[in-house]
Length: 269
Image 1: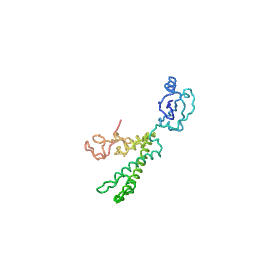
Image 2: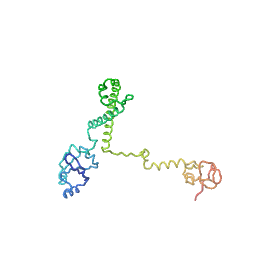
Image 3: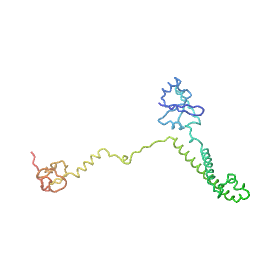
Image 4: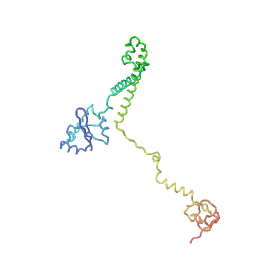
């Protein structure tokens, strides 16, 4: 029986390999693996499936070699490879919102309107919405308010886009780390029921009966290969040249004789 062997150290799991019990005993005796390593039966499943299953029993390699099975609990952390997909959703969204807010605010600030012949207002005037402007500069207060609105709009849109992108990335990373099972289905044409034994022969016999030769004397249906009628002994081919009948024509294609002429029974000794 095969086992998955892992190493547990400070709450982190390291995959060692897939081994047979005898191989585990030899490596334990040679010192290649430690007795504190954990092992679990593969059961025909993949490593991640066994690692994430709650019904799998893990035991120390030392106990397994000694023929004992003492269940051991896996650490709560590190049961799967660490990645950004394992990061809590709230922290992922927070990072996305903060990154989006910074980018959006910077974009809004760079796209703020400008004053003719003077250019764009400084950051202090934009943030204060024109409160720091003095004397004639107070005429530019409406532009300062508009510039401030650009900052707020960029902040809101950037935060929303950042949260959306963070959520989508987390969803893709989570789905890529989960084990998947492939289901292979046969094509539609291969899923049709196969004929039962004997059906092909019955169909061939039925077809042969419907396309056989009809005796011109007694009307019995015979096989295309038959030369004489099994009921009355009449010739089933051409009465003149003996060629087998072909199709439903009235005249023989070989000699031109009338095929509907009543056949005379052939005398046999």
